[in-house]
Every structure is written in structure tokens, then in C-alpha cells.
Amino acid sequence: MITPDEYRQALARFATGVTIITPAGRDGRWWGFTASSFTSLSIDPPLILVCLANTARCHAVFTSAPGFRVNVLGPEHEQLAVRFATKGADKFAGNEFRPAADGLPILDDALVNLRCRTVEQTVAGDHTILIARVEAAQLRPDGTPAVNVDRRYWDLTPRGGAFGASRHPPKAQ
Image 1 (tube, helix red, strand yellow):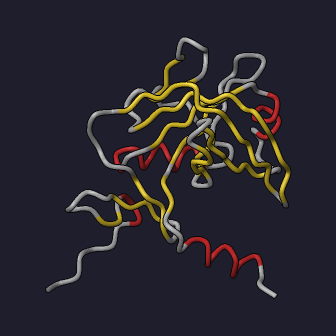
Image 2 (cartoon, rainbow, N blue to C red; image 1 turned 60 degrees about the vertical axis):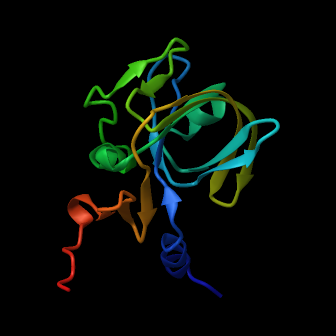
């Protein structure tokens, strides 16, 4: 039987995009987390899914909020992704987000921003799967997405590679 550590190591080798998911609580307070467990689910209707740990401090907010935003990150957002992945961090301390017309926090320079309405929730193991309908999308005309592999963020530009604190120096040729 596979151990939890072996399972984590195996799935870390699967490349995923990097997103920050942001709802607002009933009191208007903003919440968010860095998510690599995000994917498209359906084109018609336009559905996505996000997986959130049942132990996350923001779990109750996500499961009671009518919707949230998905902010797709580029390599320039590494420090932001790290902050939103850090338990206890003041996620919105850097003022990178602003309130959208619907009151939800939006990252204007995200590669893609999706406004989503939650349509279904399913508890599966130690996570809750949030299925949401995409109601609107904003696309930045330039940029490339960041990718997470082996617990490092990668830049997909032609000169890319691992970036930030996890960058490995290039090998001599």
C-alpha cells in the first residue's frame, strides 16, 4: 500500500498550473489560497473544479460563499503564490488585489481571471471538491503561465526554467 508521503512525492511530479482562488466571506472579508488542484471540467456548460483541504482555515468560507475568482498566475507572481500557500500569512498584505464589481478580490495582472459561481460541492477523502460555473473571464493579452512541478514553480518562456528561490543554476555545456 502506498504511504501518504509516497503519494505526495508521486503527484508532485505531475505538472499543474498555479492559481490563487479568492472568495469573500459573508462579512466581506477576503480569503484565498494557492491551488494547483484546479482544472476545467466542462465546456457546455462552462464548469471548473477546485479541490480544497477540509482542514484549511478558509474551508468554511469557501463552502458557504456563493462564488469565487480563479486567478491564473505567471512566473512574476511567485512570491504572491508562496504567500497564499503559507498558513497564517497575511495573504492580502501586498495590495495586489482590488475589489471587483461583485466584491470579490481580483488580481488585475493575472494571466486569466475567472468569475465563478459554485454549483456543487462534494467531500472526497480529506478534500472538498468545489464545482463552479464560469460566468466571466478576463484574459491578459501577454504572458505565460507558471507551472508547479516537484514543489517548484517553473517559467514556460523560452529562456525559462525553475525560478525564484528554487532555481537551479544552468548546467555548463
